[in-house]
Picture 1 (cartoon, rainbow, N blue to C red):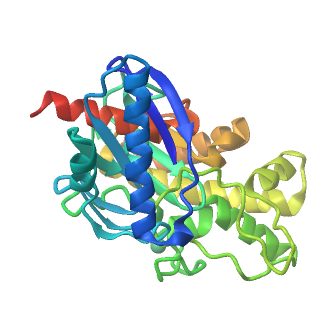
Picture 2: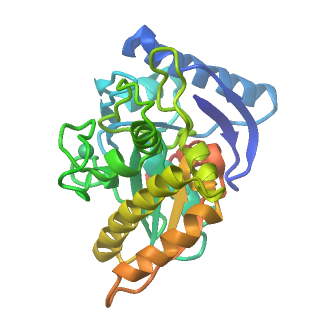
Length: 318
Ligand SMILES: [Zn+2]
């Protein structure tokens, strides 16, 4: 858990990190969230600050209007009324949001998409998820599940996704998919890594899970090997870029954004990703306007800043 005291100006005054320890079960995780939030409020008072609102963001499906964490694979949440629980415990107005949408909100308002209006933030880590931000607000969808870009179909005959369907974008082009594909082609596939059904894609994307004691080559390493001219790595990277371009072209047809901000572990591949991806996306666009394609700049603090923005926004609209 990344936690921070953030000023109304969007500046972080204090930050801390705590283990989520999801294996303890959802009730214990909720209790940790609440006590960490209490501790932060106490820290604020101790520093002579007055906390005015609390923002919490979680992965999975989040009903922001009701303040309910509907579903989360990696934390085990099922219909947890997290907003009301936190508001009751701290006595502060509380906003509950989705981690990737909050990250997108922060990148759109404070980061790489600043001042460009319509922004699509795409986080590529162990999964792929997106946030469409319009006029400083992230679109949530009717059921809190907008932005599941990782689950658009790009390869009907491709690998089976964690959601159960073959050929989803994240089954082909997430950091874990890249690592898995490389292992498969080099004969080191351990067959243990799977993509997750949904949820946070904003983690470092560096690991695809160890199998039989052997560590898979990470997506970042595949990118580096491709850059160094290794043929198999270059093939995997080409396939990845092509699939991502298919996904982004679909997104651009749907959203017509000014800027696409790529975050998550895979986006750290730099020019090795952005140069071929820009070209492949351009190839796929016909009458659609080409968006600016830029790397995220807020790093793994984006979700935390976005949570603060949600809290502050809520203060403005009582
Ligand atoms: Zn899927």
